[in-house]
Amino acid sequence: MNSSEVLIKAHGLTKKYNHLTAVDHIDFEVHKGECVGFLGPNGAGKTTTVRMIYCFLPVTEGELTVAGMNVSKQAREIKGMIGVSPQEDNLDPDFTVIKNLQVYASYFDIPKNKATERATELLKFFQLDEKRDVSIYQLSGGMKRRLIMARALINDPKILLLDEPTTGLDPQGRHIVWDEIRSLRKRGVTIILTTHYMDEAAALCDRILIIDNGKIITTGVPQELIRKFAGEDVLEVEYDEDVVKTLKTELPDAQVEVYGDQARVFIDEPHGVFERILKKFPDKNMTIRNANLEDVFLKLTGRKLRE
Amino acid sequence: MTRLKLPQLTYRVWTVWRRNFEVFKKTLFVNFLPALMEPILYLAAFGVGLGALITGTVEGGSYIQFIGPGLISIAVMYGSFFECTYASFVRMYFQKTFDAIIATPVSVEEVIAGELLWGATRAAINGSIVLAVVAAFGLVSSPLALLVPVLAFFGGLLFASLGMCFTALAPTIDFFNFPTFLFITPMFLLSGTFFPLTLLPGVLQTAALAVMPLAHVVDLTRGLFTGQMQSFLGLSAQVLVVYSVVWIAVVTLVFFVLAINLMKRKLIK
Image (cartoon, rainbow over all chains, first blue to last red; front, side, top):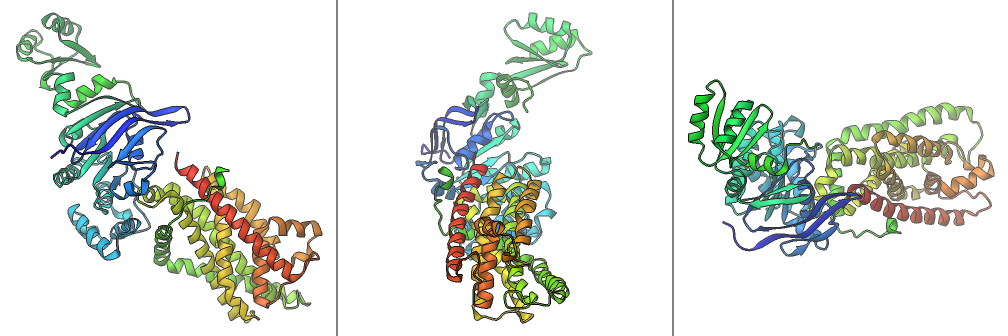
């Protein structure tokens, strides 16, 4: 699905607010048809980066081009080919569902007939056609989220920017949004997705950029990142000093991490150890699971709470 | 001088104007009713009631004739000033409507210009409603009064631009209490609306003509009503017309540009 055509290119991209550096000299490329995840804790610089891509925030330093156009020079052309689903709900509460799409279409110079046609299609695609003439106030959180995504597609964008598209949704709502993102990927839409849900990034993205403190810490395909930073499997045992001691003697090379009341070991062949520990400490809760992106994420960004 | 940098605007300004117009159409009834009722109440209280106590003529007519243009000007001021303070602030801050529009090919400058032109349109609509009421009371004596909606639009653009500057500076919506009672209310009372400016001490007359936008709007509106301007402060009627027109044009232009630049600074960090 990915072609080699570079659609978005950042070089030394930096954003400063007074003395705060929100994005610190980052380089990345997004290829046509790719779905790229920006992963990072709160305040990492994900949203700021996205906002620079759609020309909402001016770039402080460095270079950022979209389809070969400079964001600070050809903002209008760039904005015309991008669809944005922002983090916060900025639907127009003065209008009904369909009118939200029609009015938004007018900002893109889409003629009224065509706008209505496209809006009707999108409402069907996002399973909102029954809510067509309803006020925004009567929509659930999940419906609003879907309407925001529908609105982002009104101009048939080449690039879709989804800033935390599933934050605050229930599991059903999340899966509907996921399905829709997958089907947009199939249609060849280039997508940038920010999220702090690891399973979301793993499920949807071709490639992930882990961002922290305004810098890209690492980038890669989800499965490769997991293998590289967390290994194949994780053994989790209820914390106990004797358990940790045993783990360390059994596995002198493996890394043992203690998180609260849990000891966690990243190993590739856990089964022999698992059985031996189980025999020695039969009353301890113990599980083996596949390593996931969350392990990678916590390993790379630490466990300190970000606010 | 970056605050006075001329903005680049395209026809897209009208897409923002049209958004507000669509909302206005939807709420037509609640928009029309107060605009219609208020001048009737004012004319009843000040014209019929208070006016009965005033036996002499005011600038050559009855008291109720005198306040007609004042009421129109007040409607112009309130319509545009409140549209571009409270209403714009709600759209900007609570509804995030501006953020949503800026993500499209419409620029931030065009969003604000559209808001300002909409504020001016509100003033023209409100002014026209009051004009109709005043005319229904038989208080219009010159066909020039047909130009009042045009004047209302430009007067409205002036108050919209002033209001938008306050919106750009307002940290919270409560902040608007300040310009309302320090700026709008004194003008409402002291701009030749309910009594001729000439009754004020000379210093205040000069001050009114120097810094009070409403004084100019009232003056010109009254001129269109009666077909003639009153001369005062030793200035002839013709000079006063030119002065007021130029004053409104220059101040509007300056604050229109300033409002856009201040809002841009507020919205784009």
